[in-house]
Image (cartoon, rainbow, N blue to C red; front, side, top):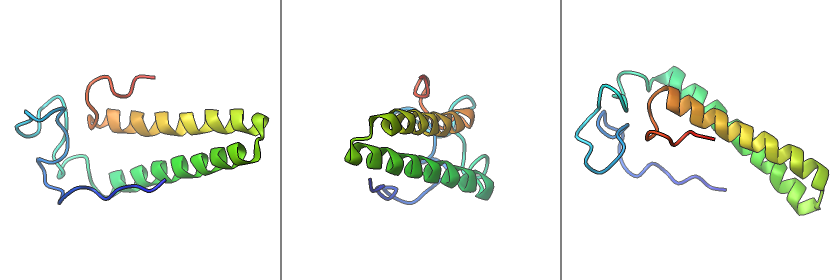
Length: 102
């Protein structure tokens, strides 16, 4: 699965918000780039993306091999990595309200 590049330059008003009517960072949703999104944030997010990618690769192998036992384990692992990534983004108010619900 290939990730598409971010569609444009990052600006402080390009992160956060929950819709087209967004007029800049809100005190309750979204953050400016000079706040939460720093090198530590990006490093942790990259770790979460890498873990999700590795888990998906294992899931894909189980599907290709028809290995039902490993498929069930790998599916649960992949779902867990997706949930951790969404929780991380939600903790930093970078998801629309309710997007991280399981």
